[in-house]
Image (cartoon, rainbow, N blue to C red; front, side, top):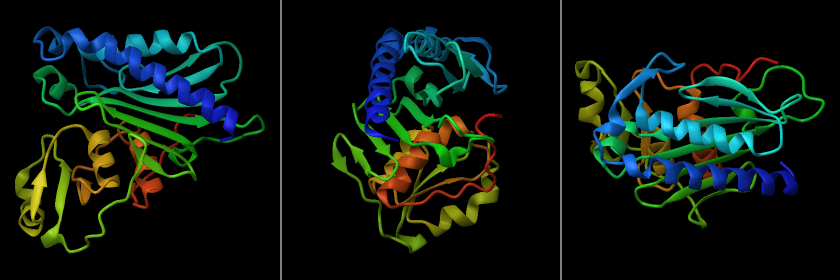
Amino acid sequence: MDGEDQKFWGEVCQDLIEESQRAISPLIGSQKGGEIVKMGADGTPTTLIDLVAENKIMEVLEGVGRPLTLISEEIGEVNIGEGPPEAVLVLDPLDGTSNAVKNIPAYGISVAVAPIPPAHKGPLTIKDIQMGVVKNYATGDIYSAVRGKGAFNNGKSLKPSPKQDLSHISLGAYVYRMDMGKIEVLCKSVRRMRIMGAVAIEISYVADGTYDAFVDVRNNLRVVDVAAAKLILEESGGSLLILMENPLMGR
């Protein structure tokens, strides 16, 4: 990503974050925000607060002035603007929806950008992500990375934990509707386990050493959950293993 593209898409990410946060603010901690209004493109229920966040995302992107493809949790894949897309944006407009509805301070937004070179052919994958931003709205922390240029939290360089011994680590986990009996050995092996329900934020916690590791026990996470945080973690010096990488979009 050259300097001009980095500046442009960085400003787009900033606008998305600010406008989306402003839009959902009245619904934080409200029963109304948690009302189910439809089924999302991923087959899971969409709450009112999810819909408000994504509608604001669409509104901002329609004013960007460049054609792009949006991949988002509720709407799925959609082209915005005229002509061939110049970039793919992968978004979770509200990471940690249940936390936001309950006003538990771990919810925010995840934005990943994969510019499409003019001569590019073939499918894009998560490896083509060049910029990632994750913000925890509740704390104001902004995790960000540009490929090859490091990862940061509020401008401070990130470094993951060096711990390797399971008995000494603090592990974040995604265990949604999991049979806990299946992970009993894991629970007994680590020093402590945290389950926050905000995947992009939790993977970012690995990047700065707040967590020593994070695991998706069900192997059920989607590209919108991990696209930005994966780059942030890798640019901090950490790593994220994905068992199977599917294309971001067909081309």
